[in-house]
Image (cartoon, rainbow, N blue to C red; front, side):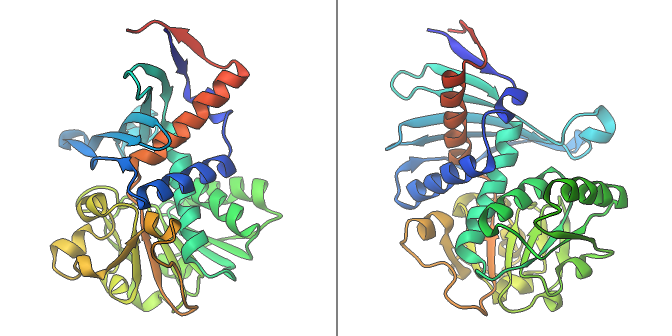
Length: 331
């Protein structure tokens, strides 16, 4: 038996956002129904290099899909080494015998499945008439979040974009306008307040360790996808927003240690009783999502190993169908 090797470039050519959203929604459902094994992420912290490494195993029992992802987060990578902030490798495993079916670049999968999770959250938690989006952060993840939102809503009236770097902000707007200019209008926001005040959907994708989005700027009915807080100590929202909101997490264990709720929990500002549901419970129909136009809803995304597994399995099947990749003997 041989293992299929796929580069990240090859992976990118095999999947679309629509594909990934369908797979991720199914993974959420399986988790909601209690049919997955997914230990919380294991972290190694490279403090002297301002980075970390995470190991993420999972098994979707009914779907018979298993994978392990190793992923880093090094915010200084692009400036220091010309490398992406986030890089990943995924091993897809045959649950019957443990054989490594495939080893593939996981960076595109990580970006796409995280964007897809935000899209699924908006589908279940945002108002159906949402037309204005505020993006806080304009990096790679902002791009896939926007892709997924456009899959859900088809078009938007306005997308406001803020970034600490004016260069990053304008590059995002130029690139997004070229692709989606017929589907929405892009506006450069001079401040976080300008980006989020009056927005229907807010997406935060920064590595901030202090609140950027303040309670006074948030109107009733808004939905917020919190994507950037993915390690202990990170937060992007004023905790007062969480006190007003219906909070939905992707996974309680991970979110409590490293998601948007981790700092307010440690400070005693919120407790587990303030968490409405896991997203899987909503997708599976166990708990309702949005039930009123004035609700403030917050999705806390930490990234789930099962999302990587189902997406990697999709890539593997497509690669076999199209004859993509190289086979090598490893074991």
